[in-house]
Length: 77
Image (cartoon, rainbow, N blue to C red):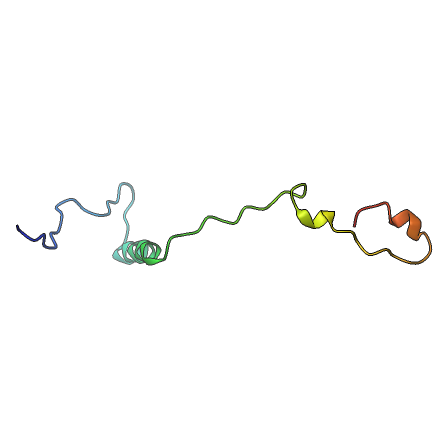
């Protein structure tokens, strides 16, 4: 069996379709793509749970003391 060696493909990795990119701009783009490829798998942003599904809303809030405390006790905080 033949071992596969590092073969450079004839097709370019990047191709400038429109405009005139400088070598510095292409190098910056290659650096960003290489860093992105080398980073561990990008995790999807954590999904926020809706306020309706949040179990913390079921926990009773402490009773407040003072004037009009009875009125404030009926409103969620």
